[in-house]
Amino acid sequence: MRALFVMLMALSACAPAPASGEKTNVLLVAGGVVEGSWARLGSLQFALPGAPVVAAAKGDALFAAYPYQLLIYRGGVPEDSIPLSGVPRFIKVWPQLVVGLETTSPYGLSEASLFLPGKGTFPYAALDAVANHQGTYWLDGKALRFEDRVLEAGAFKWVVGDEDFVFAVSAKEMFSYPGSHRVSLPAEPQAVALAQDIYLLTKDGVYQLSRNGLMINFLKGSFTALAVDEKNVYLLENGRLVKATLSLERT
Image (cartoon, rainbow, N blue to C red; front, side, top):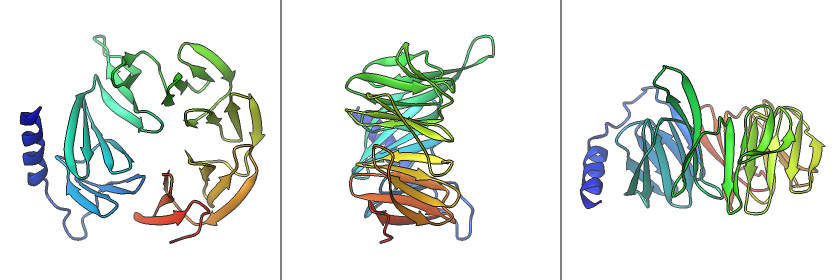
């Protein structure tokens, strides 16, 4: 493991800084951004061995996913490297870590799966997923499922949750489990995040909803990405990081 850390540190040191005016892909994470091969998380700025496909953050930990590899940094320092069985499509770190993968079968067919550290890779063709102490909840575009069991039929696109509840969201409504309660949404979401309340990114701005679906606040703006943690809401606006309070007040 020590040799792995040395290798990662060497690769990070060789990562090129973005050239002035150069267009690089920006990934929003809770607490900052990953811009190309550079990460800014809170007051930390550090280099990665390359631009990740997807990334997420939890506190001072950054999870950068590459084809067949997941790198974990804590406090800007490499902590672990986990092999993946395919190319990452999405990553969730709250409440537990789960990575959506795409692999190519020996027959050249594309297959989706889910990877959970310590548990293995599961043949769930998930569009989105969330894992907690109870197990894994995932969507296939037709239903919300708990592992091999269908919980609720519906064309859900996103699922978020914590250790007690999960919320499956479609273009028009939100379904909460347990409780099996459906509520209509104020606008079609482009992304969904969960803290104490639920946050919907739409083409007009961000809505804050209570867990029973009541609208609490709205922040107008043309944002392209959304992330939250226990303290703040993070948004991308014209490729730049915007931070707001959990009450959707810009800071």
